[in-house]
Length: 184
Image: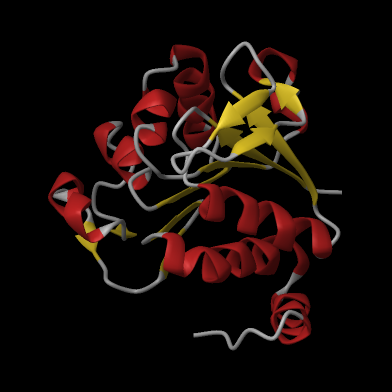
């Protein structure tokens, strides 16, 4: 069974993180929420407290198939300021393992040079930070093992793209229909 880890930092965008968790779990994908703080309770950018499944130091990265970086401010900055997480992101990229980022979080991947020459998208006000990418305005861009998305309004599309990657298009389409969502 595939495992997706969604990382939560104080100031994360709640809808972006939890939509992905919800859709993946509905599709039967083992999905864990991971606090990068020393506390399992993490507060989102809209002051919604969320209890993560585990702490960063408890994650079995060898048994994880995808890392998901939600956006939000200052959540994105807090993710990028976590050296242990950034080292794991670099390892995943070097190994060609799946990484996904939404909203402001694709800028983290751009700063690491992972988006150079790739189709990528992010939140409109952050697009200048993707200068070395092939900037897209699509809701979701899949470029090999890296998937990016634009923001809260594209969280459903990103969640379904992740489901499609691990469970196939038919499962993703059926799930979209089940939750009364018309895929773009």
